[in-house]
Length: 461
Image (cartoon, rainbow, N blue to C red):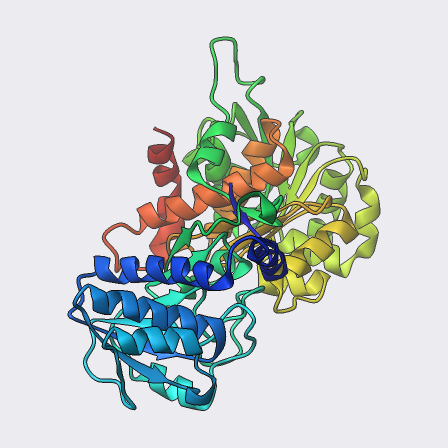
């Protein structure tokens, strides 16, 4: 996993490094990396948006390096009286121009606000950014986005590339405004220590994903139980079962009123109308489309009391919020994974702007893994571990896609994978399947969930 450190941790590591390396040397290293990134785009003219302090200094030094390459550079000083003195002097010596208005530019370097800044862009900066049409390279972070939460409270920069230094900060994992994130080594190294959380990557998923061996059979690969759907929402049962069937689950058992339609779509599923007749499984998925009435509540009571890992989604989460006694049905030593979207999460606990902190708090309180869905999905374990899955697209924001995710996750739980890692792997595979399913977009968004199963099959192959 790619490590992520809070801004306080990064600043502390920088202070340690300043004891042996002058701050000005580190600034020039950082700025040179920004300049190289800008030069790769082959611009004829670059515009610098220069704020106060060190981020503005990084931009000015980058402008100086670009001028030495023969590239025309203009700079707008948003706070002329607080511009970084050494950086400004170097920029002037290199022949850089100071301008009041943005002219045509091929690349814009955002040096307005650094990782110490909070809040949205000020009106003058927001008006200026609104007039920019060229691709933006952000220095450390897109200005106006919170560095520790990725939250936006107003106008901010939308970067094509963000160049950061030493290590990724939370904004780089949590905000889609960063674009491509490039991390430059400026010598922080071991001073950063263990990361605060991680970004799951392809290799993590490949290493954890269950692959059958010569000695495996349908039982040793894990039997997944699906308790989903109803007469009103039979599609939820089909979609959830599809995710389990195609995630190398050894066997899938379905229990519910949609048994006939599930069996027609997936003849390999052992389907029954009553959960008492479903047989033994290694993990259950419960909640998608079951309703929030008496039948749904009784189903939840039964599944939570069986004593195997459970993934609770959709209506199941609503039932947990409305009937606190359901929590008592569960053995606290049995793994539980909750997969809420924002509104479902808010039924269980307050959801603040710091989504990581909110997910960690709920996971600790209910002793369960919490998969908080979103463009960037957060997975928090009760012991404090956190990972983020960065979605390659937003095509999964459509009805039914979460039902498929629950099936994928249920199959990975049945295979015996650590629930926290299983949730991260499910989120990763689900997000990439959605992107592949939308290949050739634009297409009707409603088609994406139905296309996910076949896409998961192709990804496995």
